[in-house]
Image (cartoon, rainbow, N blue to C red):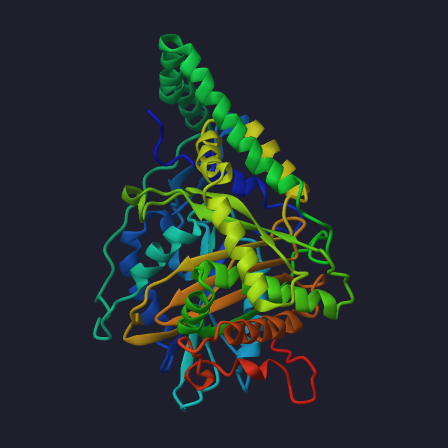
Length: 494
């Protein structure tokens, strides 16, 4: 029987991608209203919730000689104080300082000898515009532990929909299971390989019963997977976004009303995801031209992770994600025309072999021998299959509370791969939609310009979606027209 604590093929691949300055952790910055809770109060609260996420007390154990994928084991030395950090911003504690701190934290690789997560309680933020005090919590979790969609479910165990939840008097006692020996790890992996070839057996039986049908289905899957791979290989031009990265990071964000994106999708007849991708396309087009790059006829390729998790798998640990290759027409400066291009292409992709192949690749990853999966992950990290990663995850649309403090803003993070110096994550929460931009520190010293160009692009796109029946009142949303300072210089925010 397959060990439920063994990493899937995809989760294991995320470990192998963690080379050459790439850190495979997802993260978020959460800003709360009110004075920060005391560290020990927050620690006790966190400890009381760990029973809901058992992986948070587990670390990786690696099989000798790479004869099997790693397994999760209880960490006998687990100490929540190691994982919950405490920081404070110097005065004045503005958002740019919070972004700079986040960039430094995201640059640190998670220790593989510990459970693969960290939290940082951040005090010293400046007050909000209405004078309300604020604090932040920065969360970092390895991609092998959880993917973006399930991450919403797991992170939310810290939250309540009510501001009245108190702090438990003491956390429940936890007793770790004994660590397996290297011999146990090796023996279990070998036994598992030979005693549970269930999927392989079913495929073999199908081949014997109906060889023509089975071979036809296999051929179709190969063709679908080939379509997905070829779509990536053939359409990733060289740009300033694609160069070797180092370990250091910059971070910035764009925060807007979700109503703005609904206004865009309604006015231009598409989806919110179309509006997100078009904003990225228009913003990057502005930035590339600002840098002096010729964008005439240039179409970037965005790797867009998609969840292939079924409804009954919702909330479960482990990755069930694959990818689509989305074209971004950065040459197109007309917002409405760019939106139509993106909307049509994404509609075509959803009905193409790429969408089917996403699930096929996830299935195949579970059966690749560890050494082959390792080489495949390394090969992917070296190939220029895409120019950047863009994610869009829907979050909860009701107010959330942490120890009675309302969550005011949520800024997401997607990791960088070896040759991509910018990652864009979008996430909605309680009527807001935020872009989180993670960049290599040296490759994008002008990340502030990218943030400003995203703001300007979103403003222009919202204006282009206006009709007599679909009016956009800027006063009801963010003042995106202030993306640049009055003298025309870019607004640097990180």
